[in-house]
Amino acid sequence: MKLKTQNKYWNDKRLANSIHCFVVFVIVAFGLTQTCCLNAAQAVPKQKGSDEEKPKPLSPEEISQIWKKIRISTPPSSVKSPVGSVGYWIYLKKVSFSELNKIIVSSNPRKGLEYYVNQFGKYGAQTDMRWLLAARSHLLPANRRIQPDQDKKIRRMQLIFTELQVRQFLKEPQLLARYYHSVIWFNNMFADINFPVFLGNVYRNMKESTKDDNYWWYAQNFVLMAHATGRDDLLKDVKPEDLKPRFQQWFEWFRKNGMYLRASPNSIYWVLDKGEKSRKEGYVPFVLKQTLPPLKVHPEYPFPDWKGPKPTMPQNYRSME
Image 1 (tube, rainbow, N blue to C red):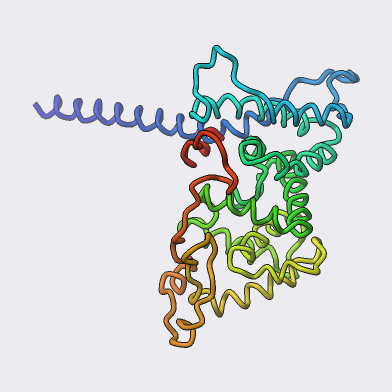
Image 2 (cartoon, helix red, strand yellow):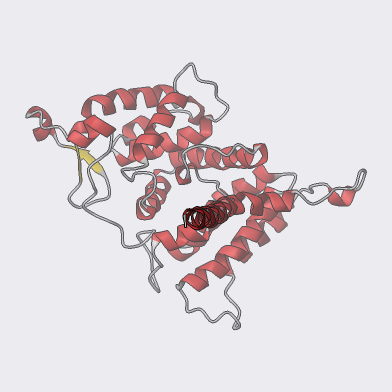
């Protein structure tokens, strides 16, 4: 009887181990999917001396056509998904990922990405959502994850993209406000569980003594943080390459005033409550974890001028990426 019990125990244990291994495999495979998608286009076997396998430059016309296809593509009749449904956006994500990848694997990606970034805000909310979904699918925006990718090729694209964004945001503050609206809608960067991590990474990487290898990644984060907390004054009259001193100014202010920041009653920003500061009534979670109070206003749409069918939920878009 004892032997049977032991056999049953070991059989059950083997089964549990098998299930555990399978679950781990699925999780790892799912986690690697995004990176593999990008690397797959770059991992085509190259024949030594073959010009056909080398990255080629894209002409301005080719870059323009890539953006046009992202902007106007619609699912074929065989894709029976209503406009605005998850299936509809999955199809558009597939097309936009493939098209933007042509820029990323070209020999002149900066030229293509510069054109791509400059299209933001020009064609309305639905088109900006396509623009954003393609960029997020390629892991390009710095607010999408807490640090750049370890893969050198992917990181190079990320730093080009974030540099172009920082330059755009400082030059055109209205586009910073528009992009920030989508950041709040996606509820990732400023969420309680994520914001302290983002803040810590920016603090460590925006010191004067820190190497500038990933400067643009953390500069993009800082610009969004300053905008979110009403310190746009620190983003004026400054060169994009010289944001470290401005971050230090903001962080010193934030360290002293962060506990007195409160959610605006009628906007998607945090504002300094001078009354609570004078009464020394600090927000305890900020003191303990550097989290901000929950916003009182939550955007209904990714962009304020959204027209047409409602978008699906933020988590559905995140699952597509």
